[in-house]
Length: 461
Image (cartoon, rainbow, N blue to C red; front, side):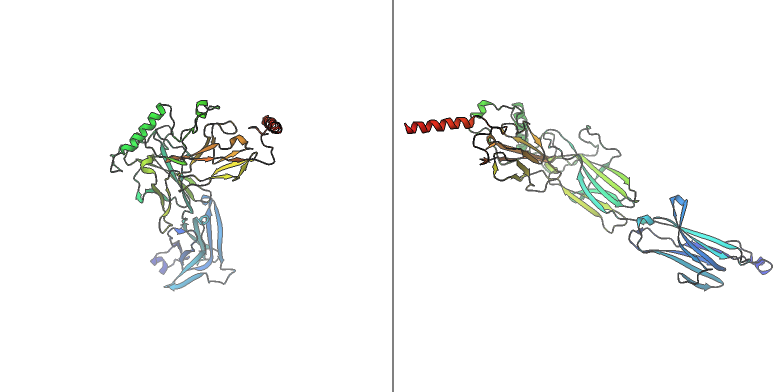
């Protein structure tokens, strides 16, 4: 209320200049996309002069005019509701935002002017303000594995991290993890663990997850693998010898290697313990230019393939703009049964052969890594191995006929080996026996001609 006179002054000599009070009805936080109505109520006993609505930006330095009513040039009062109460007039001016956006977030002001009752040349001004808080629910959520693809570690414990990425929310949502439907009691971390810090540890009491100790058979298998390494032997997932020339004694044997179609490495080493792991949780927030926040929640623990394989992890998000939690989930699964596709299906001498891993028998997470080797020898380009999902053999020579290739697919949960044999057929466009491993003409064709000629001479004799 502006300048007023006392009751005694009003009854005697004081001339009332008029009074004006302005306030904007408060609003709770609104959700982007909703319709919002801003209501400015003002009370006066004077005559209306103008109403101006402003949107305030840049910390109050800029005021953008969004609505104006000027009583001198307009006779339209449809935007106002008024009624007479005693001798005062109560007005309400409204501004409607039909589909509020995040960019509409911020302060708004309602400025009202009336004519001073003492003199028409003077205008009495008053204003009210409100802060419009616009919320936005997250638009996307996904769970990925950090530092992938990564190999399977049989004899050394390794830390594993799941990353939940939530984008598009305002304010920042609350993100948490569950395992097999149960909330995870995680230790908060302010900084990421060092890569070389080794297994993460916590001082909380030990709790058993399995109701039995490690199976003796599995322990014996793990020990047998250790013994095999000491004797120089290699399990199936080990890489073959890098020697260019194979051992002649091995070549004389009819079978150089017992090759199964698929071998899944699920040997659990001595470091695996049948206890519930200790989880560590770290959050990071990155503001976006549109006012939203990207939240990343990182769940880290020491991986135990024995109990973590086929475990279901879910990331859930709570936000005031959501009626129910938002969720994304993944199941940790070791690769099993890679499906090998070779093109062309009937390879001929001189063709380019592509051997591709075309999926698995199961859904694999996290993404596996692939390593190709040739059993008993090096690859066509002379390398001992090739990393990648697809192995390409350029201009295959006839000597690769019957060669065996091993694909090792592995992720931190386990590994599996799959073998395929390359059958190379004759190419009618290339004379038989005239191509060596380098694709050039060799002396083999000459020797065949001499032998055939000698055979014909002997038959004529």
